[in-house]
Length: 255
Image (cartoon, rainbow, N blue to C red):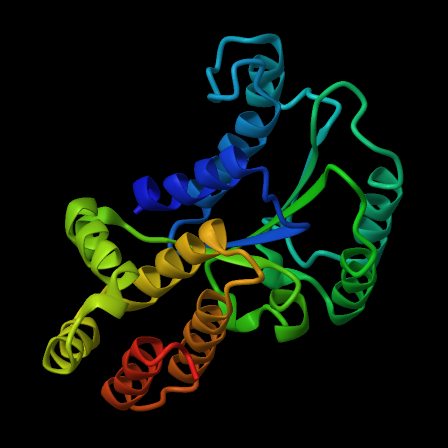
């Protein structure tokens, strides 16, 4: 479901809120690579639209841009020496573009030593340096690495339904404070039965992040509840109970 995920990425560029690192997770490694390259183009495009025709976009698509480094473990594990080379590469800012982007494909293939080295680099962010990790096996990426990344999920649109349906649910989610209790519980049931649940929660989370002002306690606590629910679902907690608790808490101001 690249359409929704791209909407999240484009919104981040428009708002200027770019994190230090992303984790792109999905079922198609080649598609995840393409999305990472697209985002690198979007960040460095002269027109800010990933036009594909400006000098920066052409270099990125050809794989010769000095501010894009792609590392993939397609031939085996990703070792610590390769991560150390990345750490050296990001020591300095962009050479010619706006952002220096490092794409680590098949991030689940990093050795424990490579993960430890990367974690140290992620803990010392540099201005206008972005890491994009991609994986089709998210459970094999250490939680310490994932915690340093902003996760975006990519799904096959044919398996998950239309973008319009997910957008409709996400819009409803964003207006949850205006719903009555029966409506909230019906909405919770609708979410629990939806195959796109994790994508919807992530999209709503990104929507709140775009709108949040840290003086807005309700929105801040809403972030906390959505993140907590995602973690509960990852532990195979009861879907309906976790969602009931979330929507009721959000209705009550996140307390």
